[in-house]
Image (cartoon, rainbow, N blue to C red; front, top):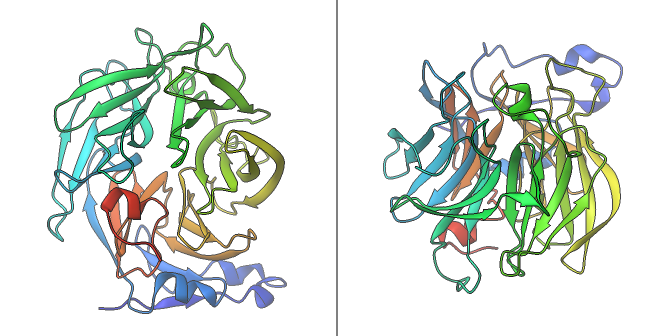
Length: 361
């Protein structure tokens, strides 16, 4: 059954803030679609339907959402439970519309957070990525690191543990440039805030690594907490989220912002500018669709902006969505204890054509 979409008038809302509070009488947590611009109907499609898949007593659905074609599953990192507990990997099968799940651990992965599919140097880009790249936040016994894992064998390769001898604070998220193969990643302080990492010794920065040569560079700084990052589909722009409004406590005057950078020569960043600010919570995990729209998990669900930074609409779940994942015709929304899905979605994620082997428009 297709899902109705609530339309929000920005013109009316400009003089009446109450226009933005309605969820069309839907109690939360529950899933709903809100259009702030007419274009959102075309982005989602007119037959989109949404539902809750799982509601668990623990936070199984937190970050990442990396696809593995061999078992047709999404690999999602859980949230940190407490002292002495490692972060689980939740594996959600796409073989059934019931989306059954299981939990696993990768033996060399201590505290998983974000990640992406990974082609090692020399791999053929038209083949299935044989590995997953995970940001391991580390703990008091293990360095923060980039770890490549084959989820089918549980064999792993450490890619990076330090910047010229200095360990990172708490690696958060990563993307691989589809042409150069370079790894772009963020380093934040959340392991320290959650009390499983020592006090940071480095600024919060964005890095680029050439995994074939070991060359690693700082490409951007000046963040409160750099978090998610994503390339535009034309590879001319890098988007980076700053979740500085959430540290030891909520600090609403700190950044809850997406910044955009020009990608120069496929290896350097220039022209930092504010792209968007989230009106609910903060933008965390971020992805682009093939038409250049920018999607981010925020305080009430997933927000969608066009390439000019204009808010088009939201997938509202009434609680924080740290991340989400595209699949062909679908978007899975992670809100820690709950997993949601929007099906019959017209938009397609930038990485879907590569990861799932389907055609791009």
